[in-house]
Length: 171
Image 1 (cartoon, rainbow, N blue to C red):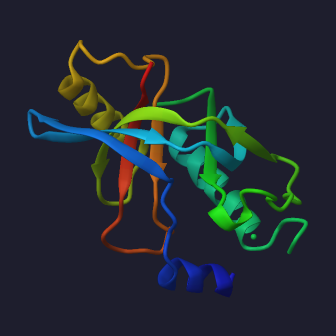
Image 2 (image 1 turned 90 degrees about the horizontal axis):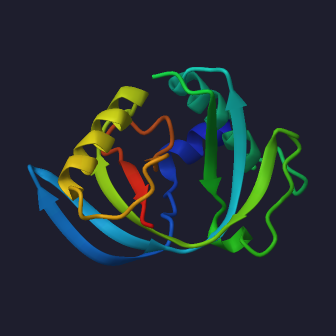
């Protein structure tokens, strides 16, 4: 646990590699269109729990995986998938999790529309910023309407300068 606290306070967070395609702003909402690289992800699905509870439980499982619980010794939703991008140095050969609920997935690259906000994000924040991004993009942008991605980049113990994003996947 001490290692998780130390890493949360002192380490840097690797961002998902992407290429910026365009930027926009409408009604005081800034957004970006990005082409994101594919890669390996550790993911855990939690069913039948509220978003905030499921994302917290999933994050704890994934933090344990990153911290060493692996074979290399590290609104209401029906289903919430919590995942993290495995760091670049482990992309070719990610460690296998010892928690059987965590699965390693390979994802294709994608192009997304993104908006960013700060603070400790809860479900209501993601819903609010998704609505703002939808309004800013208007009816001309083609993106998946059946889901959106909620992204938090910071360790739970980082008290300030937090970065969260809502992503719509471009069609």
